[in-house]
Image (cartoon, rainbow, N blue to C red; front, top):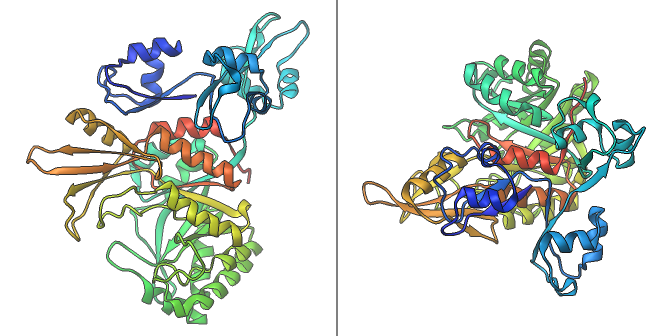
Length: 473
């Protein structure tokens, strides 16, 4: 895949012609509502078999060619490089795909084995309708080997809405976590959404593992006192675990996510002890356990959201953790990137020092935020999808900017009432930057908050960057 940023005066026809791709392919890949309406700064995924590589300090063309299993000459031709010795850090290069011409007697399984890929990956890359009709002399694109990761997505929807949204993306998910259950002071659980059965069934239909999620907070309650009442009482802890196991067996959940937030600092050790007991009980019944962690940058970070979250203990006790690396651009706070990459890396730098990398799912938000400016304290930003963000940029004819430090796009517009707005959202560039970070830190994978906001570019790039692990139970 190639990410192309629209320049002033460019049309989709020109972009498609440049990359030798059909216009409908670009429209479908990016979910464009109107192929004739683009804005300057808009990032488009161009569905080609080429790969983009950004030159790093100290890299030479022969090293890059070796990394991708191609030749210096192929890269030079693809990029029309005049002086191969003059490449510099930050330069973007198109890496042509690996190609293989079928020889007499060769079968797809043999070709797949030679290049350490799969038959299905070759079929998908070449849009092969009937593998039995291949013959010697046909040249195939060979997909490059991709790292395998796990993915999760939370949802708080039910009914027909969740059936549709989960049905559309569950093939890209290892886990699906309905954000459904709120603990009570006596250890009982309240189903906070209409039902979780629809989400469970939709996930299972696409081989995504349903993961039960429990929390102590709601939109109106921070939950610290509820958490304390449960954690400080052995009886209440036992009641909670009994209720969890009962629901998991009844509903078909295969694992648990514990998202206790705003836990009192003095309850830190009680929380750790509860986690160990929960893991002992649930492992005994064949279930896995994960936790959601506030985005801490150090062990000493102060604040109700952070202090009781003991990264080292969680990393030691549970099967994996979800880092909630989003919400810097809080709906009630001032405008800024919702999940700025520089802040995410600050969290990861601390996290990997005390939690095994193979236990970390990095959080990734699926929505945009729209603030009225100048911002007034307590004024709530509007939350909507990245697709809606693009629509508003098109509607108001504005240029999309890109903050390279936060790796996040943004723009300003004036509404019909004459009010100024600032919008921060996610696009192909920001998604790719996050996926590169997952590779850089060698993490277990990614966890999305939350389904319900259309963002087709994300799912295309996710599959382009990774092989998604599916777990057979």
